Each structure stands twice: as C-alpha cells, then as structure tokens.
Length: 228
View 1 (spheres, one colour):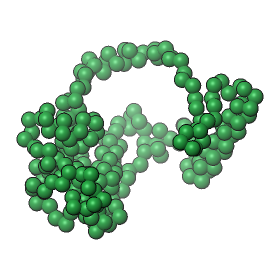
View 2 (cartoon, helix red, strand yellow):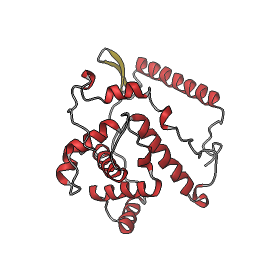
View 3 (tube, one colour):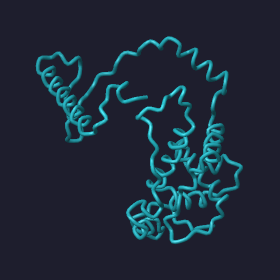
View 4 (spheres, helix red, strand yellow):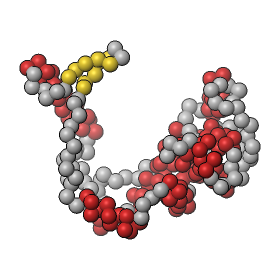
C-alpha cells in the first residue's frame, strides 16, 4: 500500500498541519451547528468539570453484503476459536518469532530456567490479554504453575517497554512474512529497529525499586517471593 493510494503525504509536518486544519474546521462546524440547532443531536456539555462533546447513538446499519459469507468461510477453514485455541495461537506465535525473548527482568538477576519462564510468560500474557486474570488462569489450567509464580513474572518481566519490544518483533515478523503479491511493497510498511534491553525504560535502579514487593508505592500488590 502506498501513501499516494490513501492520499496521505510523506512529509510529517504537512500531515500534522492538515490534521490540525481539519480538526479546527470540524470544531468550527460543531460550534455553528450548535448555535443554529442543526447539529443533529450533537451537544457540547461538560463531564467532571471538563468540556465534553455528546454524540447521539446511531441507528444500526444493515450487515454488509458478503460479510456473512466471509464469516462462514473463516469458520469452515479454521473453525471457531475459543480461549484454549487462542492460547495455542499465542504459543505458536512465540515459537515462530521468539517474542518472549524480549521480556527481560527488571531485577538484578534471575535464576528462572528460560523454558519455565517462557511458559509462565505465555500464561501471564494470556491472562492479561483475555482479561481472565492470573487467578482464573491458574484455577483452570493443567500447567502446574502457581499464582505466586505468575505474579512474580508479571511484576518483574511484563513491563511497558518489554511489551513494546515484543510487539515490535511480532510486527516485523508479520511484515517479513507478508505476500507482496497481495500486499505490495509500498512505503506504508517498514521494519522497526529493535531496542536493546539496556535502553528500555527509566533505568534499572528505578525499575527495580518499583518491582520490589517491599516498596510502599506497590503495597497494593501481593508480596510474593521469587520462586525461580
């Protein structure tokens, strides 16, 4: 996909300037429409002491032609994914890309075997990503991992910077595997350079302090001992 095809400039300043102009024009139109009563139910109100634009609910649209057929074809080819299938998808994605290698500890050192850490990371990420929660994934699984072990991994390994690095690796692997016959090789696709673990986050000293279960800033977290 090329930027010209989606009518977007390559120059970032031109893109931002155009976006600001369109937003200003839109706000001016809302102001004028609110004044003469032609806003179609859009109102400028306040919420929690701040300005708030209230938009009425839209009527439900008819299902697009062909969507039902597309859904049926997806089910015919791959079936219906349940939560356990999603866990298999996550596991296979890691086997193909190794994205769990991006999760480095904020502690000074870790003695957890990498294979054990990989399993705990996948379970913790699955619990967070599906909103099941760590307690529920422990109660329903046959993996032999304890809640304390998964919470330890959650605190010490699953950070914002590590998540970004893992997503970066997944995105790069997706771009590398795409079929250019379908997607082309346009300028909208680009590889993202990896970020070394030492350059992630605000620094190990602060990260270790925040990860310490004795830290009063994290007193709402259960204090578990590293069991690796």
